[in-house]
Image 1 (cartoon, helix red, strand yellow):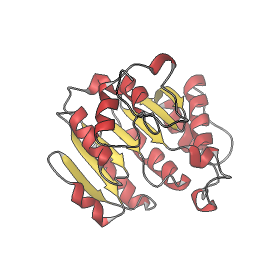
Image 2: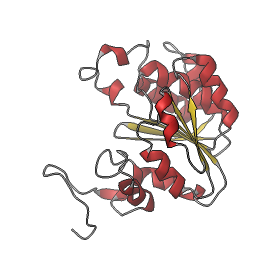
Image 3: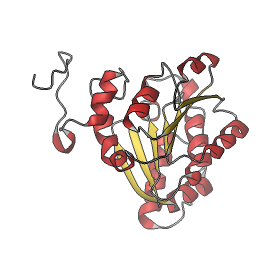
Image 4: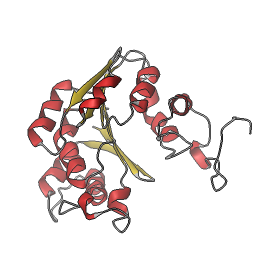
Length: 225
């Protein structure tokens, strides 16, 4: 009641370490992004890692534009940043404005994903198709372009964690994205290569270059060493 938020009858206020209000979540609510506390409730957690970048001149790359709401949120939260949104749909170009740049690209195409490296972002958020092969291609291709201390956020891991809910179209890789993240975490924690299953070389490369991994409901954050 104090915050003035509207909650669903079955919902509950955030609890625990991240129960305080954050500027990022307030801006997310303003622009109606589903990352806010009224829906996925990612932003309180993201703010913990992103606040230090708030006043910096940087480049942020978000995969997936949808209705442009999160791009406008990032634009306001990072007043000195250039925001790059990537989407397969031509209609996404309608969301271009000051400091928001739209790139049309297919995240299933390795050459097109490779070209995104030229942006040289400090922050990457994957909120695109949620198709496992797309998530893995982006992570394995783009992670090493981050500078030391850069942040990679892999969203909507529910497509990996709840295969009974999502169609087989999402599960088009020999390893799901959550298991890849789990193995990257093991490499980061042990400083030893991954030797099991598919993508072992790629998982090892990301894991050895990772300083910290934070996992939450349906989302995982990697911090570059």
